[in-house]
Length: 80
Image (cartoon, rainbow, N blue to C red; front, side, top):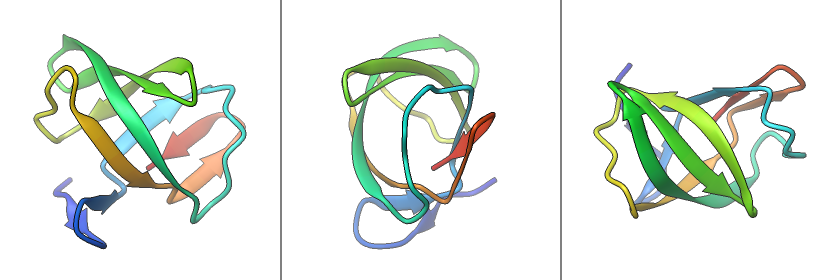
């Protein structure tokens, strides 16, 4: 899936995670820091003090700060 720029550095639908434990609302904009690259297309992100595992087709770098918009927030999945 290719990144779809929304506003400057905001992207939609390019980060996916399961069972985050975060309370987020669709449309909410937030910052995330890439804390580790786990394997090809898999990363660990820190969002609001919590670390989550996520998948992305983007080539993210450790330490990179992302501005993301919540595209879909469900109890079992999060798409940013």
